[in-house]
Length: 167
Ligand SMILES: Cc1ncc(C[n+]2csc(CCOP(=O)(O)OP(=O)(O)O)c2C)c(N)n1
Image (cartoon, rainbow, N blue to C red; front, side, top):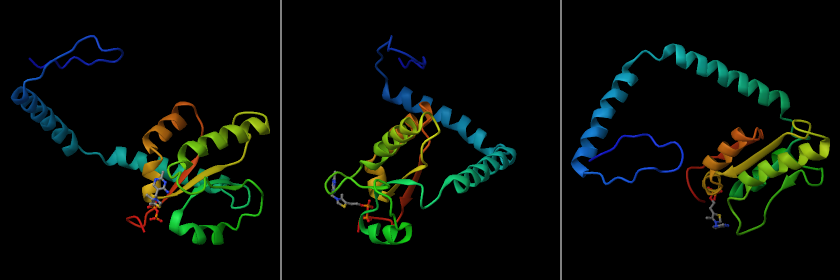
């Protein structure tokens, strides 16, 4: 037996799946996905591009090298990042020290909350950016960070420096 009942809250049913039935059902569903993929997506794509452009414009409006607080874990790119940002304000360029990689995602959210609270409320604090190596970005559990950011409306900019590996 293979139940396809969608469970939204607590599990109500515990099922054992027959392997062949499961694969057949998954394959059948994949055909639906293929049909969806074959549909004309150009209007959806155009809307997505517009939304992306608006997002970039918004970031450009708010991002300032002097006033941003950086939760930074650039690892081997630290010198490059530091030379370009040239932070001068205390507590504007924050790192965790060695051995704690993955810290910057959650930290960026916390910094944004603290900055807003200090400035008198939501959206009033400084622009906050996480900047991390690509591996470090993954260490920071980005799925959870993005979910929390979206769910609790804590906007932060994330920059992952993709040097395609661990140097
Ligand atoms: C919690 C933790 N685990 C492991 C390490 C060891 N470590 C130091 S650098 C590094 C890789 C970082 O890769 P990436 O973020 O891609 O930066 P890159 O080395 O490419 O500059 C690791 C795993 C660490 N510092 N902290």
